[in-house]
Image (tube, rainbow, N blue to C red; front, side, top):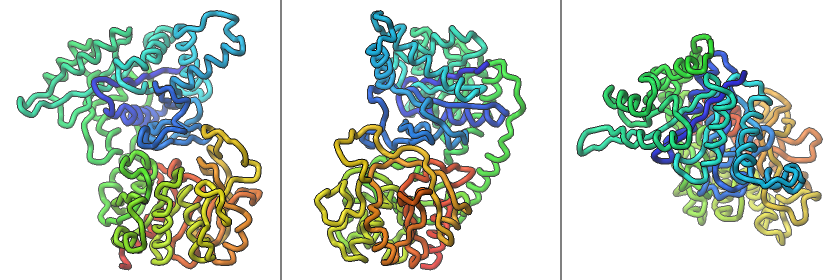
Length: 536
């Protein structure tokens, strides 16, 4: 029978529920268990696909094309699993499904209510993960903070699940803040006590309390939390701030978190095998060289908008024994060649990530031009690939008005455009090319060297494509197409052979990078940037 673990958070937001759950998932997987993870988000958007990155951070895309919360990236990176459309649910999606059922007559004329119809929809979604994946353990994070009015249907649903599956098959993990009052030199347990009381008032008794803190907790504080929150002493676990994010699983395991979880769920497992993880941490700690890489984007003020890209760069550094220092550059700050040179002269590599809209586009084009003309390693992702094509068309082919129809549909040279079957009134949400698509790689290319394969699968999130009308002209001018769809209809990757390293891809490789297994292009990009650093 599938076991269910629910992770909630209290006191304040941003405590790291997602990281805590991802760490626990990794530890349980190391014990030989099949683990799946999901996030329940209380906001009313159907999915985060149309949300401003400043509001929500990046949109994480799964293999099957679901646009999801960024915490799913943590789950995939830590646990090393592939999630799916059953891994993220919002209040908006719940009501969308329920209202559609009501319109179709599925409820046979009954009054539709929060209980049981909304809660049943949530429960069905949670159960479906275990059924679809045949997982031993399903980990579910409840977004928001205990006490938030919008989270109440989700909390009621998981309370009902605990009643239905029975004790020993369900576990509640509550993540709380234990603040340190500098003036008195004390750690305070009262916020945790109040948060647990709030949770108990909703019919949920926490089984394990994970205490987020910046310094080790005194035994007296741990004992007080155990006593007043009604849990066993070893069920109060420290979650300390660590220097390297990927140290967190080992830190939690020192408190025997996975052992306690398995005991409470009556799971008979092997001892955790974390050798691959500890070997990775040794590589991380042994890095000596440094490399500077610029991310030129329009949302750089919120680094979470490019979370997976930043993590993938770090992963590339792990495999090249170097520390990747990211220089965040606001694309709008690049207004001319002189400014561009000033901002980029000290970096060893330039990465232009994905995005939508025309804000900052001209700055990204200038950054790409600088990389091409100065032989600085360049890596373009999604919009970054389109930028590379536009820049080449403008400054090599001489089409000064070259652009994307997304930015100027009236331009005579839309080298990036909608496909012929895409024209018309297309809704903004859920209508893009989403999820995994195959890509055929050209021989004797940087792409083939990186992947070591001639056919790959990568995740997409975009609407506009390389305009095939310009294929021959751009190719003849030195822009090599090195990745296409198997039928060669869609351009997926371009390179400039005249440069030491210049790759731009239409897809999002960052989503498939892992700390113990860096994505091939990120690995090679960091390697090229490190080489460039040494040659300066």
